Structure formats: C-alpha cells, structure tokens
Image 1: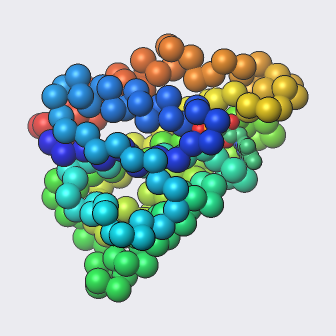
Image 2: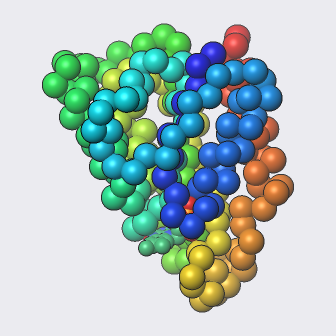
Image 3: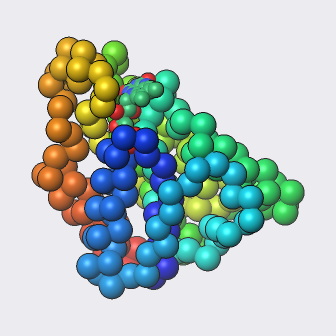
Amino acid sequence: MRIAVLYWSKSGNTEKVANAIKEASEEKEHDVFFKKCEGPDENNDIDYFDYDLIFAGSPTYQWLSPKPFYDFLHDKFNKHKKEGLIKLKSPIIEGKNAVMFCTYSGPHTGINEAIPLTKYNGQFFEHIGFNILGEWHIVGEFHGSEENSTQGKLGDIRGLPSREDLDKVKSSVFEILEQIKK
Ligand SMILES: Cc1cc2nc3c(=O)[nH]c(=O)nc-3n(C[C@H](O)[C@H](O)[C@H](O)COP(=O)(O)O)c2cc1C
C-alpha cells in the first residue's frame, strides 16, 4: 500500500506522532511518503490520489491547524475544486482512505479543543471522496508554558506524548492497516 504522512509541527509533539505512524507503516512493509507541510504545495509535488492511505496531522492552535498546515489543506482544496473534483454528495472512492490526527494540550476545555480540528481537516479529504477511518487526538506538553502544562484541564501533561502514547498510536495504525486489508 502507498501511504502518505503529511504533518506540521512546531515543538515536536506532532512530529513524534507522525514518526510513530511512519514506523508502524514501515514495520508492515508499506511505502511511506513523509512530509512536513510548511504551507501551500507550490510545485504541486503531492497528489493525494497517489496514496491509498493518508495520515494528516498538526497541533491545534485555537481548535484548528496552525497557518502552515491550514494553508496547505486550503491550497490543495482549491486545486481540487478547479479540477472539478468536489462533487455533490461527495461519492466515496473505493480504496482511498485517510486518518486525521492532532496533538493538543487542552488547557481550557480538554479534548474539545482538538475535536474541531480533526472534523474540519477531514472535510478536505471527505469532499474529494476519501473515506475517513479515524480521528486521533493525542495530548502533548504545551512547550514554553509551564502553567498550561501543569494547571490546565488535563493536569500535568509534561513529557507527553509518552513512549506509551506513541505505542498506542502504532497499535492504532496496525488496526487501520488490518481493516483496509479486508
Ligand atoms: C501558539 C500556540 C497556540 C496553542 N493553542 C492551543 C489551543 O488553543 N488549544 C490546545 O489544546 N492547545 C494549544 N496549543 C498547544 C499545542 O497544540 C500542543 O502543545 C501541541 O502538542 C504542540 O504540537 P507541536 O509540538 O507538534 O508543535 C497551542 C500552542 C501554541 C504554541
């Protein structure tokens, strides 16, 4: 299977998750295209339809993706729109799957700060016929803010995501790969 891991990360939490996804996929001997997306895909190097499974993730900043990743998704969507790929009823294309993931610190309202991001980002894929197989929200330390990392809704989140959290991500990847195989 051809798998793409498209992500953005500033302080490394999301990158750890992206790496865990890559590791798990490679352990099962799939080809992985791994890319930190820093904004619009100017040269059009990435074609979603080249992949059977796309993992797309970023940190949450005010419940959505930060500008580099947000711009990447928007740019792709605008190109797909121009190509006439956004159809009414968004028919599912067999064999095209995606998983949305994010890391978040949830200092105010916990996981509700992360859910809008995966729902929103998923729309960029569902609109072109991808089947959304998962929405993953992984807690990560709020680097640079001890208060947000210790006094927030989720308590002491320093050091997260932990090795155990990343192993859980890998198990979830294995489950998705099994699911698609059937
Ligand atoms: C500018 C900024 C804004 C953030 N806003 C939120 C937020 O609204 N809600 C939240 O849960 N976490 C917020 N965070 C925390 C990050 O989402 C979280 O720490 C994430 O794991 C960082 O990922 P990264 O290490 O891949 O950059 C914010 C972090 C920064 C730096």
